[in-house]
Image 1: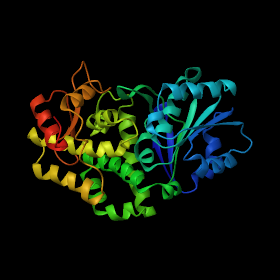
Image 2: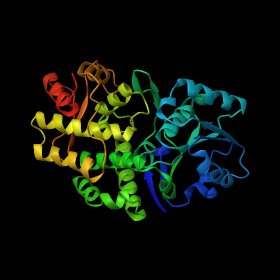
Image 3: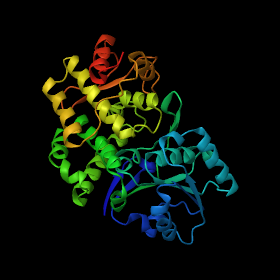
Image 4: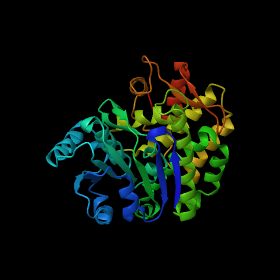
Length: 363
């Protein structure tokens, strides 16, 4: 087992990466606050891992909450149902919530923890590669609004993260690719060597070679832990982690949450960000082509956004994204592979060119 640390003073916490962690009762008890627990999962993960975790928690009073699977359920109505069960179980301020699932479960459980009795402890037990490399670390929690992804939320750091590598064996290939898209993002932001490493090991990563996956998860978590420690509330450099997300969130909102996996939308969004960077003269066109080739050819990710979303709809959604400021779209763009920058103002004609070129039939 590898253990990394997110250094946030009194809110610091460990990220454990290894095999069999969901069944490790000692690790779980170390993170519990001493009171009751509520284990929140979904109807896909529950049949696979719920009993294993409940056995590890023997002796701890646990309320189990099983939600329907899917991004479309990450909303206030589902959150209200969680509150109902927490109220019925009389969970108090010493209680701990446990998120057993992917990014949706992690986000909604974290937000429930941030808001229940004005804040209780929670544990992240991510069961998707995307959640392990990205969303389980950093304390961003929230739910979606029909007009924007993660528009309602809070910063609330977990007590610990348990990244159990054995759970990745049960993931569909599409989920593995979605997680690897977020890993590629870390290489593009500030680690060109990692980008090259991912490209050269694409086949092994897709084949779920354990050592390669553990290395990828550890490198992503280490990078994110460093960014979060330096900029917890995204006032500066942490915003670079949104590479591809402004475009990607628009795709998710326009197509209906769940139609595109988050990582798929981010993959397409990173290709669009690279294209826009090239049109601005910031990124060598050859580098933009390589980024697309690695995502599309090496990893088999979708890189062409839906053609039936109008340009005006894209711009409307991006303008209302939570990262926009005073109605201005805020992009994370590239000045090289491994060199991301924040762009507050981009000429709309260039944005339209990117949308037209990448979506093909956009109007």
